[in-house]
Structures are given as C-alpha cells and as structure tokens.
Length: 119
Length: 107
Figure 1 (cartoon, one colour):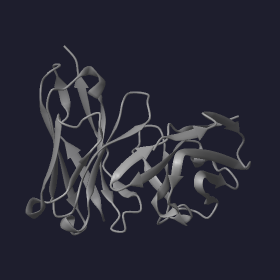
Figure 2 (cartoon, one colour):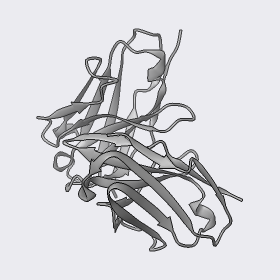
Figure 3 (cartoon, helix red, strand yellow):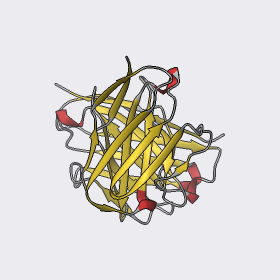
Figure 4 (cartoon, chains in turn purple, red):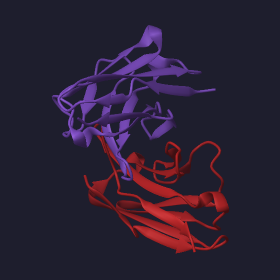
C-alpha cells in the first residue's frame, strides 16, 4: 500500500525556519516526483514545489521562490521542504503528494502537517 | 495559468446531477488537466486525470470532459459521500495551479 507521511510542522515566529519531512512507502520512491501543496485555514489548495524522482530538477511557486528549498534522500525514502524567512501568510497545512509517473496528477497524498507562523 | 471554478457553491439533493465548471485563462492541454475531491478534514483525492480518465477506485458516476479553456466535472447521481469540495488543476512544464474550488453541499 502506497503511503506518504509528513512531519515537522509546528509553531514558528515570523522570519523563522522549519523543515518538513515526507516519508514514502509501498512504492519505489525514486520513480516518482514528489510535490508539496499547502492549504491555508479555510482556503483552497496552492501548489508550492515539485522535485523530480532523481532530485535533479526542482520547481517552485513564485510565492515561495527564494525562501523554500525542496530536496530528497531516495535511499531513505524521504522528501524535505526547507522553509526559511517564514511569514504569517505561510500558515497552512502542508501536504506532500506523489506525482503519477505519467505526470497526470497527484495520485497519493499524505495527511498533512500544520505550520503556524505567529509571534 | 489561472483556473476559475464555478459556481463557488452548489446546493443539490442526493440523487441529483452535478455539473462543475473550470475555465482556464489560456489553453490547457487535455493531458495536463485533473480534478480532485476533498472531504472535510481529509487530504484531496485524485478523481480524474488527463481530463477524462477516472483514477483507481473512482466510481463511474464521476466523469470529466472539456478541452482548451473549458473543462467540466459531472457527477451523474449524487451519493451522500459526494458532498465535498472539488478542485480542478492544470500543469505546464512542471508548474501547477489549482482552481479555487466548488463546494457541493446538501440542499
């Protein structure tokens, strides 16, 4: 069974940093790109970042470019989202999801981890 | 590419047909378009990919259609578990965007 589990969320002050982790199981982790999607309280979905299966290509939404860094450790079946210079509007549930191998959608999602940026 | 979903909320009864719309600000490849369902307190779930194809385990009452800038999700007969929020999504050169969502609520 394919599973993704996020961790690392919590309360952080504005300007602070946090690193989220996403561990995958039930599939060959390096075969799929991993994406991060966030959802502010009561709001819709916002794509944040994508990293290819090899880790060689990374992509970011304009709202986080230059502040967030995505990475992965395939032998450990883990993906990471390093978030720096956090702002109040980064407050959201952060989901990791698996991109289908044909890139046709995000077919498995974690349960999400809540990041709250507040003083 | 900006995706605009309509209506924002639709009120229907179980057994009724629901048609949700998603309009793109520029043309989207049919291979690069999907729909998701999100129930309260749950992560999103992939329903439809490549505009028309149902994801694994998705019942055939869900169907997708469209091309270019206009896409639709139809639920032929609403079941109680279908009352949820639905999001459209597109991607272009590994950049993704979602629509704002349509909430299907019980009338």
